Image (cartoon, rainbow, N blue to C red):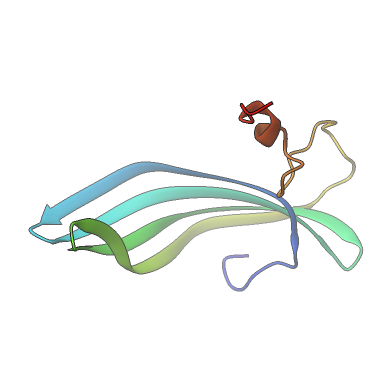
Length: 108
């Protein structure tokens, strides 16, 4: 799973934690732990992959704004398994049908 990309995702969730940052003038380096869970269909089978790894980033401050110059992803663990059935009834969406759009629509 850490090598290559799965087919088109039908759902995903990603968390970034334990961020370590070291700054030296206008340059910085950071390491952040990442947990990503991806759902996709492959060869007619619904699958779920969980990937645990780290973003290793080099940063620079340009015109007063910090930006990532280079990102390297290190995969520490991964797991892929088939999904037997739908378990949740309320799925998030990767578009404006997601419930968060209605929650933050204050111009009703």
